[in-house]
Image 1 (cartoon, rainbow, N blue to C red):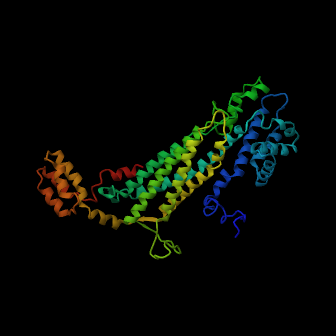
Image 2: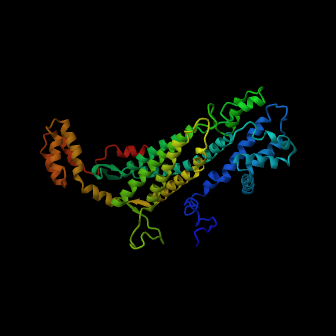
Image 3: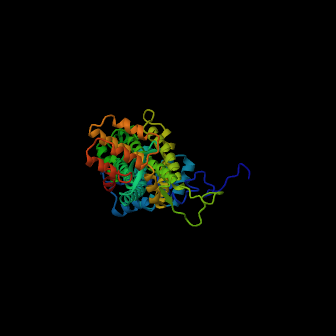
Length: 459
């Protein structure tokens, strides 16, 4: 095929895997972050601003009747792909996307006498960023909801696994080496609690907007209608969109809240990514088995393989997501003087970052649905690790004043295979109360669990 051949866009020719290989998995985001969705949100902001102006008693803009208000709002609620295509056709001629939205609204208003009379109040006193910043906030509101639905499903799955396996003993691993035992449920609970806190951080970020003109001072508003107190008018429109008023801005809303949101998402992603890696390792140790799916192939040459690809895909996508989210968080709050356009192209990649988040969460959920605990493997690992009881033994020795307890246990256990019999023989020599001795002799790696079960049930 010649290098200059232009292929038609499809799932198999898309440059981005989000629209190609993973297109079906990310389809929901097309209605939130696509060019069509961006235009639809812009139309909504323009219409709500116009309707607010019509209530101010401006002599040149009579109040709109209920049918005219309904007709105006219908432009946003019924916004179609054909409508978007028409705006893009206007843009191709005038080379300005927001002005194209204004012209399109005026075109359709010509069918409604009241709206036609109000046509010059479409985009009145606005700079493009007044419309864009509110549109982006509306898009991010829907995008946040889409991601938190998955995060909450992931949290519930972790919580269920924590409760179901609360009492199931498992050897702990610190630095990859055998360490103090825990339970399977407690380890899931750790992630459930962390993720729950991160979800709250994401959901409590205020989504902000501004409608205050070219440099944030209502200059054009005051020049045209000095009798109107403009700030509460604009703040009310922003509030009606479900956003929080941003009072001090340049031409652009500072985007600090966006940085906060993206940082919160990145921290949640780090929790899920850590879970992916831990589960990958536990599968490698044999602590979990993966359910084989009929018809699936794990390796092109090794027929036995059932690879932990869901956790690997999750890890990879969340790494990409965090690279994008952190760039967005660092870049967007920084603009030269009252405005530069370096944020515009970056903001068009919101859906890319959210798409990789979505893929990461879905892959992790799918991986969790395919694993089951191998209780025998857990028990065997514990039974082969009696050296982990050196910790409670030396701690009891400390309580009762036995000299150099740590050093004596280190000599007995460090770097050695310790059997039950050898440890018990050592315990029997200790100058400690008999009850304490019997309690230590009754202890096993599988019962040395502290508050693990209780903590697992509290997530």
